[in-house]
Length: 450
Ligand code: NDP
Ligand code: 2IT
Image 1 (spheres, protein in one colour):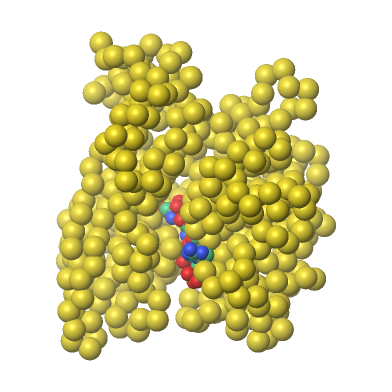
Image 2: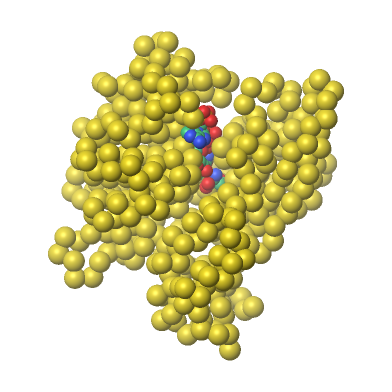
């Protein structure tokens, strides 16, 4: 029999082993608080030492990407794929290219991905990968050369039934195309080894929109639960990439007033709210602009404010959709002081631990990304099933499926996150998401033995 574990013992064990991996420890800590009581009450989970095993990646692949750029100079980057857990299906999760990528960041993302994927109800394990390559300001040719070199190594570790990467920060349709092309040339076969592919080569309708749209579908479910609606609400959004722009567009379509977008250089403030026309222009143009937000300001679509985040703006709902730890304790205080009632994460772990605590203590709606941004990977799961059947489903069918999946994730969070005996019926979505995902993952692991 394995020894009995508890929160402190497990966290100390991980903290001693991985003391310099701050983002990974932060993500694990967030989950342990909620799941250890469930674990301690379950003799089978304890006998199988499930919690430690869920926290530790099954495999980490590291490689050096040496490549020759378009000017004939050799460049060297680091590449990783963290294959965290495959009990529920092939490892599944995105690739990120950003100068801040390191093992701690990828381990936190891979760990969270397992919980997120469990919530979708689809058969997917969890993983994440990427590189410290900084694609900003690079030529299209350099991007292609880097993607090809990255895939030359990654290809031997992935496969449609083994590990299926997708996009994440700075990995969009163009990069997935180049990565997929290199995989196909090296392996001489069509298979759904990546998701987010172009519609002409195995891609799925609605995948591009799915994370942002899914976030707003989740918001709609929250509003229904609280007998209110999106229409007429003022919404702040951070980020100006795939997730942020599609979330903003869907929120506007639902009658919300979206007053901000942002990036690492500043904020675009639209006091009267962005129009759907402005957001569609941004969606069509963001991938090939140096700074789509200053270009929008030049077109009078909003006012550009350098080096500012949106969290000081008065709003009813905040949707952080840029990156991890972008919303700090002071930002959370500003949101609460201004009457914000709901925070739903589009990004992965955008709120720091202190910010989360403030939201939960204030008993406003706070939904962690592993639940509210699961629409992207859910559509990836649907892309995998279309690839396996060699077909392509219609956009309206997939949009309905996405809606149904987000509603069911919401329901799972409510079932596990409602406080017994609380007359205010407060839903702790964080606890609900962590416990619902943990039960599914733990049961899959127990059933398969050690
Ligand atoms: P994109 O690369 O399309 O956009 C990222 C956006 O975030 C850019 O506007 C970027 O600004 C901004 N950003 C990045 N780093 C920072 C920073 N340190 N401070 C402020 N802004 C920053 O990525 P996605 O939209 O795909 O991803 C956004 C988030 O959503 C990530 O956390 C990702 O993990 C998560 N996510 C993505 C999914 C997907 O399907 N794509 C699915 C689920 C979650 P700049 O251009 O200045 O760097
Ligand atoms: O964080 C995420 O869920 C993603 N970047 C999408 C992963 C996927 O495999 O579609």
